[in-house]
Each structure stands twice: as structure tokens, then as C-alpha cells.
Length: 78
Image 1: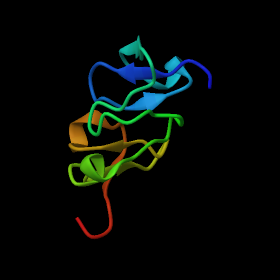
Image 2: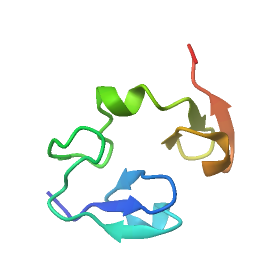
Image 3: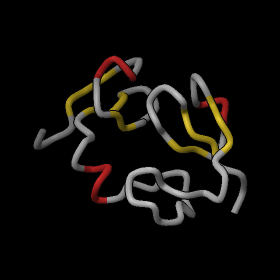
Image 4: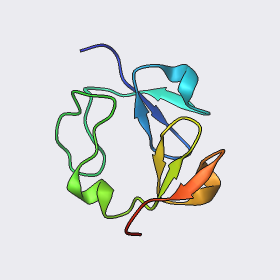
């Protein structure tokens, strides 16, 4: 697994820190929502899904609030 980065602003995880506005290295690759190992930068657990309501039309990033995305769109079913 490559190094993971977490955005200090929105909590998003990625392997490429250039995709985050405030990237911080993730120690151990652990998800803050569920505590499980986050082997993938695209890790989305059940606890996280319950809070996510928006997706960015530009990059596909998921977020809990629209102000964390550059082109927010409501997720289907939210």
C-alpha cells in the first residue's frame, strides 16, 4: 500500500495529496470513522456513508457538506 493522505478540512482520503486542500499523511492507513485499515484511498465505510450527502461533479470526491466541494451535487437518495 502506498502512503495515504487525509484532508484536514474535509477528511477525504487519497493516495495523491495534490487532490486535497490541506493534506496530512495518514499513519497506519486507519479510517477515522470505523477504525478499520483503509487499504484504499477510496475507502468508504458504513459510518462514513451515513454522513455523506454530496459528490463533486468535477473530481468525484464525497463530502458531508456542499461547502467542502468545488462543484457539489446532492447524492441520489439524500
